[in-house]
Every structure is written in C-alpha cells, then in structure tokens.
Amino acid sequence: MTGPVEPAPSRWDLPDPADAGPDDVVAIGGDLEPGTVLDAYRRGLFPMRLEGVLAWWSPDPRGVIPLDGFHRSRSLRGAIPRFEVRVDSEFEAVMRCCADPRREHGWIDESFVAAYCELHELGWAHSVETWRNDELVGGLYGLRIGGLFAGESMFHRVRDASKVACWATVELLRIDRATLFDVQWTTPHLQTLGAVDVTRAEYLRRLAAAVAR
Image (cartoon, rainbow, N blue to C red):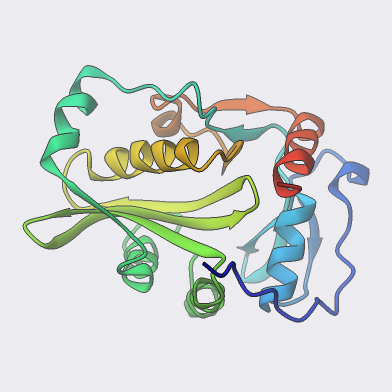
C-alpha cells in the first residue's frame, strides 16, 4: 500500500508558534498550496480566514480529544447502530456540507474546498461519514499526518450523526495507533464528547511526537 504523496515544499517561511505571543493568530497571508498547508500543520498551525484574510492560527489553549477519553454517552451508544460509517467515499460532499453558507460563523470558502480536495487526492485529507438509507447525513473531515489527525469541521443533518462520526474517528485512530486528535477549540458540543484544553506548549510537545510517527 502506498502512502500519501509529499507535495512540493512551501515557498513561505511560516513562524514557529512556540515563539508567538498570546494571540491565537500568529501570521497572515501566504497561500493554501498543499506544501504550505502541510508545513503549517506540522508546526502546529492551521488556516482560517479572518475578515476575509488568510490567517494562520495556533490557539492557546488548544482543544484535543484524548483517544482514551472519548465520552460515549448512553444516548450515543444507542445511536451508533442506526448509522453506517464510511471513510473517504464522499470527501468533497462532506466539505461542502460543512461549508453550508447558512451555518453560523462559516469560514469554508471555495479556496478551502479546492485546497483540501487536492490534499485528499494526495492522500492527506480524509472524511469520516455517517450514512442512513444510502444518504449522507453527517460527517467530519481533517488531515492525517503520522500519528496526528487534525479535525477541521463536522456537520449533521439528523440527530447524533456528527457524534457518531466523531466516535468512529476515535475508534479508527485507536486501531491505527494514532496519538493526537486535534479539534482546535473545545466547544460545548465537543466537551460533551470528551474534548479537553491543553496549553500551546503541551500541544506542540504532543504534536512533535505524533508527526514523527
């Protein structure tokens, strides 16, 4: 089995977040070429737009879901059998559902869809999807680099569909001996699934070990 394809290196020298100040945004500008995006994640950065400008973020604290600490509630346990889980069968569709302009605080535009679909084609970006009656009803997508899975966004069209996708992602990462599930920020929704905050310094320590795998 072949691994992901390493793209051309970035032409940008992204900063080291370990040297950054307390702000979550540590740089602006650059591009979304595959080499730039991968270099960013390996450094502990991720891209999002800030008032239309491409920005590179390193939150402090950082949200992670411990792979041995996922909270599977009674209701979630009951929901799991109601869905079929697929991986990478409709990556672009998952992204476009996450990018639905009707969603509050949406930030995924066509440039992000194009960039992450290219990373998917290269073997770096993946989707975990929940299906019911052969219809895509939920899912999430993110980047896998070594032992790191950097979750980017999730969506649901029926109750519990995104929670089941998150549970399935944790199970798949545990089977594959990954070590770090990054979720950027601990929202109240993610906290119900076991997400916790770690300091930027602690995240970068875990990241270094994960991407070296």
